[in-house]
Image (tube, rainbow, N blue to C red; front, side, top):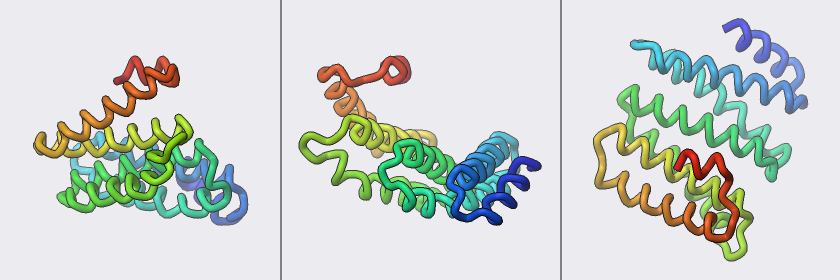
Length: 169
């Protein structure tokens, strides 16, 4: 909580400092995900993740092509979607991830798309599949997992799949 307080005060006092903003986002995310793991703290976790998500737009507007910022967004929104589902707001969690998929689909599915964009789309699809699977919806999860496998196989065939992706897929 102390790190959240320090980074939030700094980010508020220095709105143009993107490193400070990124640190505040990560602090809120870390506290939120920690609270998700503690029974009965879902409401508090969701509040922290909502704060992290609220800081994202300025970071992404500052440098839209920053893969680190996009990765931070994916991670925060995936945790926020999970928290929404755990708070009984499953449909909102699904909508959040589907919205991200829709935003990124044009770039990721375009011919000659950069591999990191294609991979990012696969990761978000896997997060959505996990959300469905965790909420006993295999009919929705399985086709998404199959699509992820197809995307990652395509990257593998082009020699563009990292060892980390191979190990975790």
